[in-house]
Length: 209
Image (tube, rainbow, N blue to C red):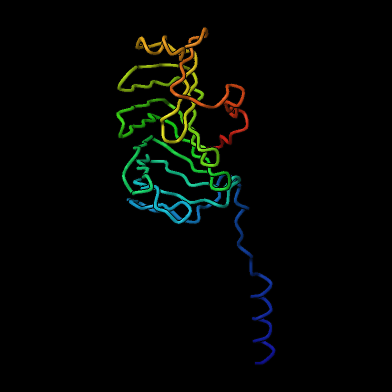
């Protein structure tokens, strides 16, 4: 009887098969966290600076570069040091590259400030290390004083000092009296950074979706 039992066990071991799945490709990497119906505060250097409202928030550190993904829209409020809302930002889709602290928003991007400025474009980058907003696509800017349109936009992250190139739109007499408009049709709105330091980082910006 003992010999028969041993034979059955050996036969079962020989016929066992290992079930494995193919390796996960980088573009199929599973997110570490996916949250729905998000309404949360984000701190910067220990100070609450942002409120994020999103239908879906995916945190994925398994892709290169690691990122947060807001594939179903993003609404973001930016606060000043006294926790007063300074700016509202929204878009159809947004990525936040956590290593470089770079936001990439695209699809019906809209910004509204408490000062009455409204910005719209199909694309916007927000570099938190350089404290800059910029867009390489057609942008439309409305302020209490003027209305501008151009193919390139750059601003500080508070939307107080900005530059629009290849501009067309409505101007006030002060724009010409103060020499804010140059021969190329570019308008500076109290922009303090020299022209040769204007960021041109489109080719180096990660664009994997």
